[in-house]
Image 1 (cartoon, helix red, strand yellow):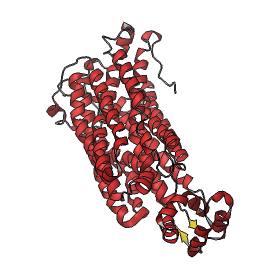
Image 2: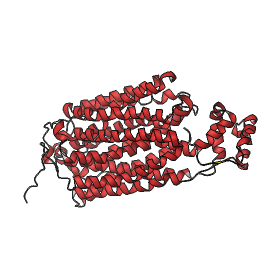
Image 3: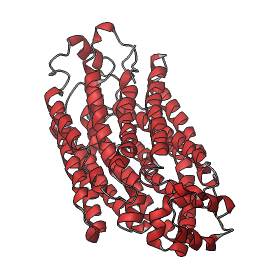
Image 4: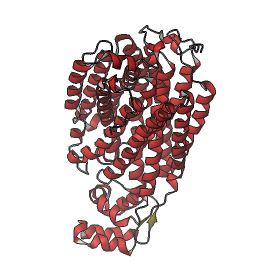
Length: 511
């Protein structure tokens, strides 16, 4: 989407080339990250037979490494710079992403946990490097839009995953390994392009003095490249304001890694059926990312104070998330009624006559989730046979397509999160000097990852005992968290006063 705020005609466009690289890196990052979420029902129920607690453990391994990596990678990027730090991050996550394909069934829990741990370490460098680069290359008036565009790569990656995975992986999980090998070549190409193109604005070839001046036009206090001690960064309330607001990352992790499982457990959408709903969710969230950034940037250009514009955009984003509390109230039924048996009897169903006779034991039954229905069907025909004919069973028994209401609610909430995220990231570059941006983003991201880790542990155990009904509390928290943490952010950093290289408030110049 070619959306950018107006700037002086002579300012140049080199910074948008840098933004394109950030967008593509984030796309690769999220495609790698999202593959497991798309494959979760298939790997759990068809290949490795994990419990919900096992699946939670695998996600916890990723988030543990992500939390550790965000602190260390943020500091590394601030120390060595974005050029080398970003390239290292992409190389590490791509290597571990491909190593998933080597995991064997006998060691699937341990193997996936180790692979996800390495993936989390590498991927933790993406956002500290991306936001730091945005702070270096864009003036404040353009940063929210630039962040929204680069952040929208997360949604593009999440869109590509459900589109690409079914091209290689069958419904029974055959060739699942190929899904984890798809992004390696793109990562290598990106690293080469990044190292060839990226330099700091003052050293980049092909950028004019007018564009450099435009980049620094409304952030003169950030021009210095001094180093800020990590201990000093965590000692200011603005860091904690951002970090507490980043607890909402746990909601995004929930959509990313558990959303596909929920749609399967409740509505019976398998690897083929999930593709379109997930694409819809992440296309809408992509629009939310760009719209959220555009909204606050537009308000600033109309003369609004930076803090007022950012909080207006954050509030709008938070309100988009509230309706998701209704997701678990969207009904569905799987009925073993006359229509069900007629559909099974059609030649196109592929269900053997012997299975049709065995399934007569379910006649008259009505189930409120696909998980309950498939368990009942497995008791009638056997677990192995149920897995073989499951798609036909679910399509024949599902009484409605109301799951699209749930998809729409999740999509709106995901868009709200991405608009929230674009403006929250921009808060850091608005307030902190460039030398501290990577460390602040890393520390805040660590808090978000730890919150996601705790959420995974809790949800995995709840689902193990209560089944799909356990999602009720997850969606309730997802819908209300943003308004709560907006209040926290407002309390701790109401005026968004910029900090200098010593992290002291910048005194406004006298008129």
